[in-house]
Image (cartoon, rainbow, N blue to C red; front, top):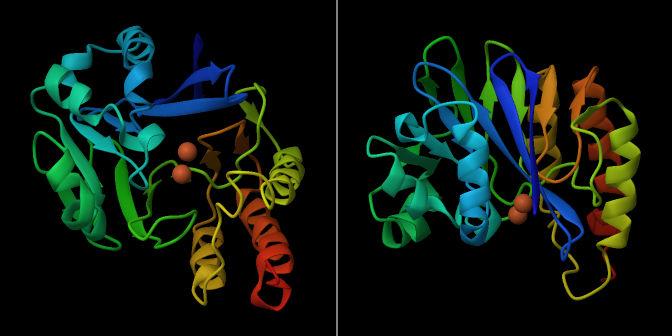
Length: 246
Ligand SMILES: [Fe+2]
Ligand SMILES: [Fe+2]
């Protein structure tokens, strides 16, 4: 598997592995700071390639925080491997994530974050946003760097293939196509639409992110609030309750 590293915003390194069997990228993001933060661990089976890529940026044993959105193998499958190679590292996740899943699965307890709780990594400040069922999973949450306005948005804006590290508004179109494609097939209905979906997405747009760090596909720069608003309108029109004949 081919892993590439690109700095997509100041101190934010995108570690991207294209998985030919899945036909998609799995992107991890390293926020390099006094207390380095890794967003998603990647699959357990991808640990070595992710580790080697991260080692090209910093000393892996110095990793301090391991964040992820929700309990899935691509988000946190290699958590125990990272906890082992970085002795001071701690997982960061939602209260639901810690109580329901992570504290049983992980070799060390997670630090559970409340909605809106912030954490300083040095120059950067991470705000945790509890976003149940957005993009999916009861335990879902996202991280926002309030200093440089990078939103680590997990599976939002998912699109397949092996595209460029960073792109503009055209990513919205690709994400919309993927939402339609993901309505059918064995992995269909990945994105639930609940009474809270619209408000949760509106809250993300209101952050006015400068960069969206996307887990599968290109990250986004430019008018990210407009991109999130556009995605929200499309999700509402495509998955909203009035359309729900699935
Ligand atoms: Fe996911
Ligand atoms: Fe994912």
